[in-house]
Amino acid sequence: MVTRKCLHLEIQIRLFATATEPERNVRIWLDLLFRLWDSEYVKRQELLNQWLNDLLPFPAEAYRQFIKEFVQANKLVRWGLFIGGSLVDVSRITCPILVLAHTEDLLAPPESAKALVDLVASQDREFFEVSGGNVGHIDIVVGSEGPTITWPKVSSWLQARSG
Image 1 (cartoon, one colour):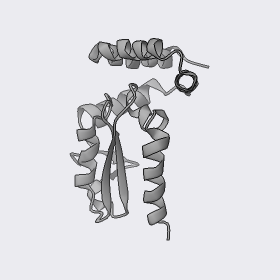
Image 2: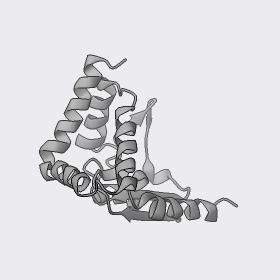
Image 3: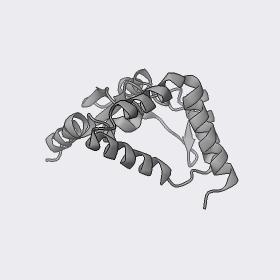
């Protein structure tokens, strides 16, 4: 069941996206209007909307903490994030790392995502940016470039490191 706090949080997220880039919402609706004849596009939009509407409610206090620590204070990058009483130090990451970003992401713009690549100690690190679509970071997987660019990229990256 969706609680009042979770519903309020969802409304805040939608208002944030609408207020920061109102033309994005117009573009989404215009794209749909001009592509109503394209049954594959319409089906993908329906699946995307179904997925967005079926998300489990995220606890409001956890979201507030995430925004304060990761977005406002940038503690992950500034070495101020503690989990379970231990300091998180991304410079200790030595495993292979692939960072994905989408050109239209409001929550994690490509330059923010790319910063992680520069902070880890791994010698095998790669940044991959995807464009296309109009819903931001969700497009990286379910957008038009997901099956043709992102999935093959991730698959080949994993395969090359899977012994």
